[in-house]
Length: 294
Image (tube, rainbow, N blue to C red; front, top):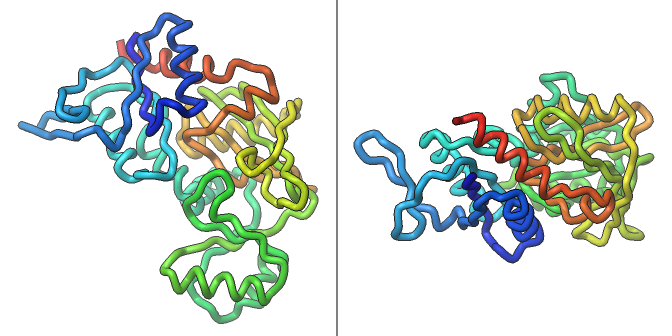
């Protein structure tokens, strides 16, 4: 089966591992930079070029979309869908997942537990707004960002005010979120594929760091989930419309709280912590999608 990875860099850990496992399973796995894909509509028919050459449609596409060129990359995924090529995940789901507020809105609509959250562009009544989400301290989040970027811990009213003024002056929107003190510096990353939990790890942040991201010096450890955490993770992935998702969950006193659902989750830390072959799980998901078309 011919599987195409959409990735900006062949040298990335995830891209290298996916190619390795695809080859080991007997698949033809190629890599294309989505920003080098040329989208064509002619006579009402969609087609695609990679640079100057026509791109033969693969059996399945596995998008690995980061922050650079997100809008264009999502358009590339959508174009493959128009061409009838199965993708893991669909463009609309990736688009929602990339916007933190849109994702939380979808989760809340489906009854998935999320931390108390506000978003406002109105600077007055800040005291009341902060009380509504139990702070300060509070967590401030830009709507787009990955690996912990755009996430700010604000300890006092003064710091909240200062940060909001700065961000609003730049024309950016930002969420104000309850700080879950009992989960400070740690969370659980849960991998959900085709409606099933396949792997999970607890991420623990570096000393003095409130974010638990592995790319910020955090470490991962294997964790055995309760049925409650598994159900919440699966519901979150389904609510976001994702066939393959990394669901980030806080361990609050009230139970699991989903803070983010990732459409292109990294898995280097997950493989290291769990000793599971996560790359193979991704390739198998793409192969199942390709077989479903035939």
